[in-house]
Amino acid sequence: MNPSELRSALALAGIFGLRMLGLFLLLPVFSIHAKDLPGGEQALLIGLALGIFNIVQACFHIPLGRLSDRIGRKTVVLWGLSLFVVGALICAAKDDLLWISIGRGVMGAGAISAAVSAWVADLTREQVRSQAMAIVGASISLSFAISLVAAAPLYRTITLSGMFVVLAILGVVAMVVAYFVLPDNKPEVPAQQDSIKVVFLRPELMRLNIGVFVLNATQVAMFLVVPRLLEQAGFPLASHWQIYLSVVLLSFVFMVPLLIYGEKKQRIRLILLIAIILLIIAETIFTQASTVTLITVALLIYFIGFNLLEALQPSLVTRYAKESKGTALGVYNTTQSIGLFSGALLGGWLMDSHGDLSVFAAGTALLVCWLIIAWSMGEMPVRATDSKDVATKTAP
Image 1 (cartoon, one colour):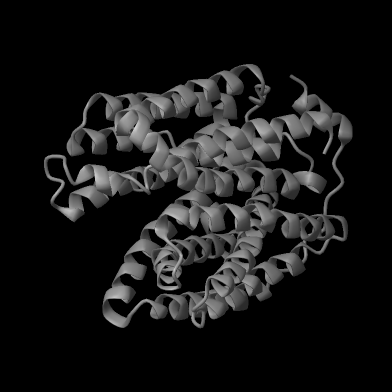
Image 2: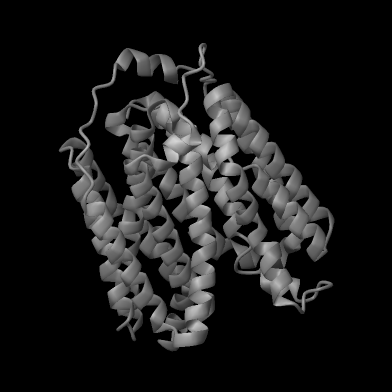
């Protein structure tokens, strides 16, 4: 990547990571805090307050992604971040499950994932787009790891309300970055957009939407069980973050060379299939994992595959979508949110009905089905991109 592309990718990764931090940071502490609030004795209300962020996001990914195709990415991203800030302040002001649910819903309404991913595509050449998407994907993994490390100390120091204030401040910082660092890429002449139906039914995009559904459903279900496995292996819950952070960081060491190879040799299909196979191997190891070492190995293999797919799939969506990137990524991110929600439900039901290990068996089955579907994918050659055009796009 040239310096302008790298700067844009890092700035957008920071914005994307902030949104995910708003989701992840509460996970380790919210259920503990909510028990002492009115209605906190009802697990359903706690789950609703925590999960409404994703539910509302799923409703707004497509409209805001499509809108970003028409009026430009910057306007949509700034609007979405403003809702994130307002929602966080609502949560900070009211230590009540109902108001926290409302605030989380407002935060989720600023669903900018599609606009941010489309903006990455606008500001990078196809030859380096997967690398840029990998930087954005890394922000997701790092947000997850940071939340595991920082959530408990932050909660003890500034309480839950203070954590929401921190998220609001970070949201303002992200708005400043979006406004001053990133170029306004609003097209002079609006491009002709495909209808949502056409985008949804395009076979190449349907294959990728199925993939992101399976990827996120199996991830959420898996992490319902992994902490239990670590505890059963004698590793205390308070130290789990050490393993998560280590495997996330180490996974990038193995992932980046594979990604660069796939881009340079135009073997994207091969790398995508390898990534899915790595997930299948990890799920299979989990069914036999009884030691901390084996669980750690499985997590490392899993995150190598996961991070590859987080980089490759959105990049492929933007290539197949052409002039309807925001719309296609809106559908993609909606499917992702549905996958997160479905994985939590499916994983919980399987654990109650068939035991913890059934989650990995079901995950393996879903991943094998995805591998069969992905196998029919054709190799997509990298299209030459006019460097002058890219320079114009990325100039501040």
